[in-house]
Length: 399
Image (cartoon, rainbow, N blue to C red; front, top):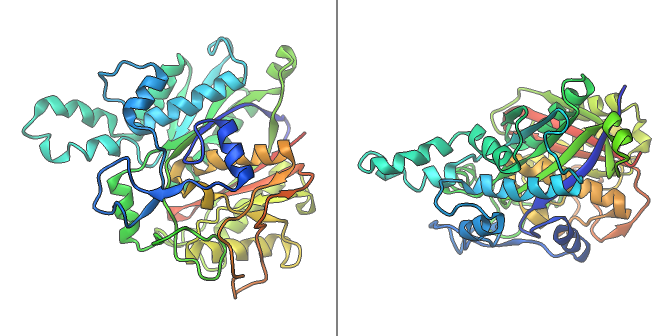
């Protein structure tokens, strides 16, 4: 890349912690956040487990010091918590001091509110205000408004690769001199619609998800938000800012194979990783750790494993793990969550374990890291693959 893209701040809220420090402690101690559903009404409570944040909307409103009389969605509230932490982490006092924008991403949007009032809109006009909060862009504007951001705001929704594409878009805006600083990431709450939808697709497990295990049954859905702050080299030098890491490479591709399934040969994933490596200028041997997409569905793990073998060779795949066994699959927020985890891995020279793994897959000879492991990590490759063939890869580097 002709210009380094610095990461100067990060923020996160997930089922394993309400900020970066709490998430790191959970990752370090092997404490997952998968549990029975408590925070919203569903007939699946007690039978389906999710990565749920045990804070009510009212508690989030209080935490953010918002007006209690509003129609802010849970997706927006989670995004506000994470974005605020990211901005504070980056030491930004005047958010509009430079050309600053925000690229957020979501899949759920405001469904948590609109589904609640779906059957009463027609007879109760006063509830129709909640419809405005349904679309994906509403959450982005709400988060930007909470931050006081007056610059460019955009929203990306490419299923489970959304936050990765938001990060890529932010990098390109800086690289091409359009913006100096971009807050990028994603946010998604749990909702009946997504829970019922994934259950209908029969890709939810009835227990705890087991990424890359031969006996994997499916995923646990999760809710979360995570944002990182990207800044140009010019700002970093001018402000003498501390850099957490660099976004050194990125790539996305679409194999147009199926509405929900990945291709058998992992073509989309292969092309995304190939492009990310090319963009970074790194040799494949320089990747120290892969934070795999690792949803624990039969199709995804097989497809991703084959793609990694195609890139690195079966005997040379870098050490890898899926952190979704900690948080559940957080949909559009997933790549934002795993960007933070990738940066933490480099900062502390740790590979976080692939929980619940027992049996190697019979299709290939790949075993994830199953215990917390110390290792000097300079470059992390992070994969995020979504429905519709949307495949994205990011590479984070120490320098």
